[in-house]
Image (tube, rainbow, N blue to C red; front, side, top):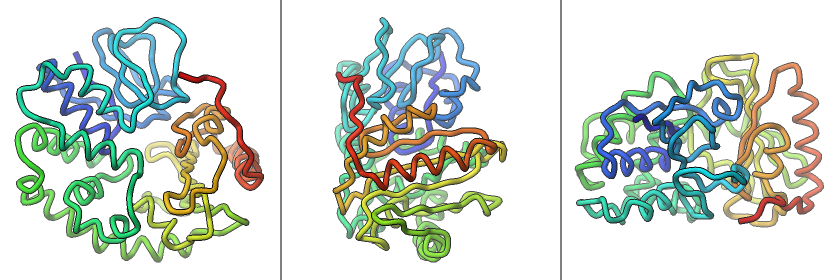
Amino acid sequence: MRIVTRPDFDGIVCAVLLIEALDIREPVEWVEPNQIHRGLIDIQPGDIIANMAFDERCSLWFDHHLSNRIDRPFQGCFQASPSAARIIFEYYHKEFIRDFSPLVQAADKIDSADLSLNEVLNPENYPYIMLSSTIHSFRVSDRPYWDRLVNLLRSKDINQILKDPEVKKRAKSVIVENRKYLKVLQENTRIIKQVSITDFRSFETYPGGNRFLVFSIYPDTSVNLKIRFDATNRDTVIVSIGHSIFNKTCQVNIGALCSRFGGGGHHGAGSCSFSKSQSENIIQKIIDILISNQKNEDKRKI
């Protein structure tokens, strides 16, 4: 039995809960959502997919992204929820010896981007937000760190975790990194009407930083489009889109938009990937849709 999930805060909490509820001993398989969408992961019988799209080969599936909803029987649970961790927590609530309520509440807040401007600009003042800030987008070299966080979260409270030498080192670097990231965003972001477009394709390594920082820099924008190459394959372009958490005037259903191009997500955030040869055409289509700012409701309702 193996957990297959993504390396963000919600995915890490999902792994914590599943290990505790089911006594799983195998290492977590950390993957990017686009790898599941494109069928690049060897899903095996017994695998549990959490916080990502369904694969018919898995034995259990837990997710909350509306664009990933399926109309076939499956084992597990899919429902609207601020986090996938919340679904797993409620599904296995009788199996937990320890009270994981504070951790799940933090996953709800962080994954649903229910953050204030102060929490975005000063994460060091908010323990769970600080911890989540140490988790970058997919870097293969960070696998040991994601595993470390899973083990820490299973047995220690947040204040103890922040004193862990590796966590403490990364937390300090986040503060410095965000200052640098501010400049990187300004140098690589252009504005078209209410849309900010951040293009990181010129970078060999994807620059890390607070994903909500762009909205504090450009308060008049209502949505951000981030473009980068896949970390392991520069023939694949990944686009991430998110509503501003401060200027809430974007009407486009991002999950539904991304599903048109092989991806998915929530109403307010999502991602998709495609080949480099198709990228300019698809990116322009996405930009045009975001500029039009018209509702595009996903017909797949819960």
